[in-house]
Length: 219
Image 1 (spheres, rainbow, N blue to C red):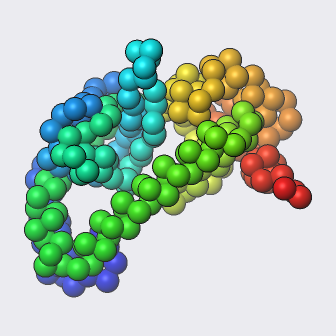
Image 2 (cartoon, rainbow, N blue to C red; image 1 turned 180 degrees about the horizontal axis):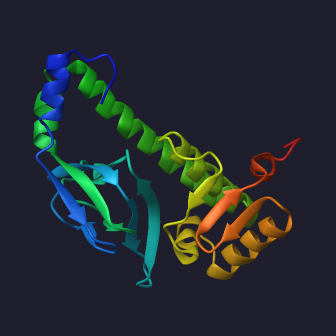
């Protein structure tokens, strides 16, 4: 919800939610090419977005978690340009976009909020392009881990511990790295005492060391 709303405005915005939809692990929320009708606010769970690469493999384009909005990709041409897949059992609020547009004209704060969400998505996309275009493998993985725990901490979770709902292969696909490179780099972080890994549970022991990998002193 955008801040500073009057009670009657909050009530009207709350009424935007048409329904809630539960998804099982690996179930698809929407498909590439599917007609765009709604935005989806993630209540619980983690999702990945993916597209098919030229050689037919899945290319992961992002990971989304509770508190974030999905479906913005469909606004531009009224069709989704990726698949959204649940990485665990999840629940989303379905928000018809035509109702968002109509109410935005009456509640300026909602319009600004939608613009801010879209702006954050643009900034995120630019950050990913920078990540893939100019960083070495250890820098990419360090930046990914820092970003992940920061997003989770903003939602009330631990600043240093995370359960990786995505596989190492999916992380590699997102970062443009091979599975072997992800495993080797993560193992190096463990040996150096930067992180601790137990199955899918990851704990950051030295966040400053990760930050120095991303932004080395003197760069």
